[in-house]
Image 1 (cartoon, rainbow, N blue to C red):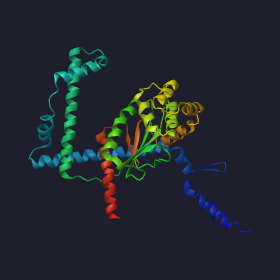
Image 2: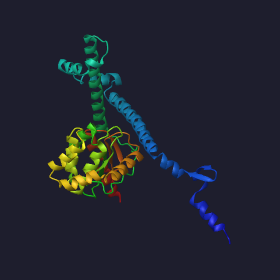
Image 3: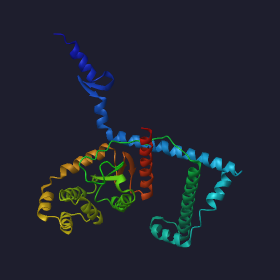
Image 4: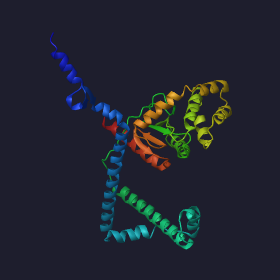
Length: 331
């Protein structure tokens, strides 16, 4: 019997370059290593992009400031003095007082006079930084800057996750969140704004990621899944975030009653624990994406981490809509 074809097929299945280790005849492949390290590798991809983007933005800002200073026959320092220092606006006594009241217990042995002076200087530097950013944005828009540094895109499945918006919407946002997370609760009105602004252009899907230190969050996720069985996931979603951490099982059942759910069906679903496996699947997916905190949003696969402003979401959504429109014109 000629075994040559069989040997050839085996070699083709696992090329030598893809075998990274051999342990007493057992091979460890590149695919196995990447599967084990996928969360770390995803974080590294994102960090690599963010480092490059920060450097690119800084270089663009420097170039814009140089060109604007040249147009005005100034040096950059004089330009910044005129456009940033002169226009940053003063720090008012009321602002100093409010900030001093908020931080006074964290300033150690400093006297009140020293503390207030530090607060005022910090507020002043914050104003300067904000004005500099605004000025560079003005120059950026006027110059029509284009960049070619593409953000990483991650494959984030929606599957049968609860969602609102059409399945064929050009933009899909997948949210990974924890019902015990106050930052996630802050994102609820922002997502409503997105739906109001963009309508059928955006689909929003939810996947659970109860963090290890939030012991009530897994059961809250199960409660949301049980409510989804009765067609009221998003209503329960909003109630759970509005509950501000009051997520004991008795609270979850009270929320179901408030929503008018069939209580016997909901109680049986929650008590059975049958939704726990789905929550664990979502956690595994989040960990595979390298997510370490919540909320985390993937906008057409692009990561937007934390409770960001509506303006930041709109910036990314608009970029995605423009990219899709441009691509469709060239096809």
